[in-house]
Length: 392
Image (cartoon, rainbow, N blue to C red; front, side, top):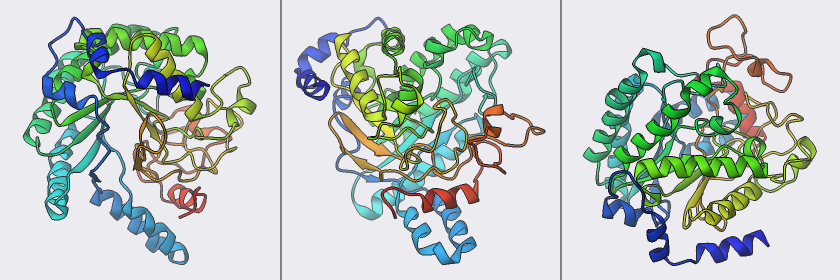
């Protein structure tokens, strides 16, 4: 029933959507507005990151009896994370390599970039807390040293298609975690600076997706309703609905696409898997006039179900496996399945004596021996390959 309703909603004319997309911010670039109505993952190759390939190859050499299966992972794309001002220097290197791959293939080569450095970032967690603090000129630095520089690089590679996912775990915190002082202090900054990033990155070659948490966080009806209200506020400030292509869910998480894990973990949550969450969120968005948007679902680690007893556990979950392979338009209103969080990169350090330790990373459902967030966790990647569903 939900699927039929959403399909009907998504058949509404683009002209109607354009009327709904007016806002109070800067005017929408016509070329970007046109691009916001298309699935950017169609008819392109995906950029393969040589650095990720090197990590996979090192793991293959460490486990020679399973090297054949491990090496199969090298053919799949992963997200490229800009999680600090210093790491923005990687962007022209990545895009330069993407241009080489595009020239070699003769086909557009798409890169997926995760933009992730808001002031007071991840206000409810320690392991991935950011470098910028609101009280330490963080807003100005975010704009001039981070977003403006990224926008300049995107412009200089205007021949390349780019997908930008903005600020995982940010807007969701405004729904559930405003009781925490760090999140409460960041409320207006999160809204205004996400809008700033949208305005700056809304280029003809860039498709923008806002993070939309996942079923186990915001699956309840009232949470989804409040999230949509936050989106509308952000998009009004950014310049309207046509400023973004859509939304990204399950980023860095493990929620299964199809099974009913959620019913066992949180019986009150009506979104018992990620596709149900996407469908219900799409219906709610359409009811608020946000139509013709696509979704990205991160499938890098959600292949194997029934690996958690607590849905809120998120750090290096034991037993996880690679999920559906990155590909375009796998389901209705899904633009792509994609490995947004590069499989094998740690969620956070498990040693409580180390900086940025979060107690979640030492839970009884988390893998031991984990390095700092973003660092290659070889044994964990090895397990992801072993547990892949479908198998490699």
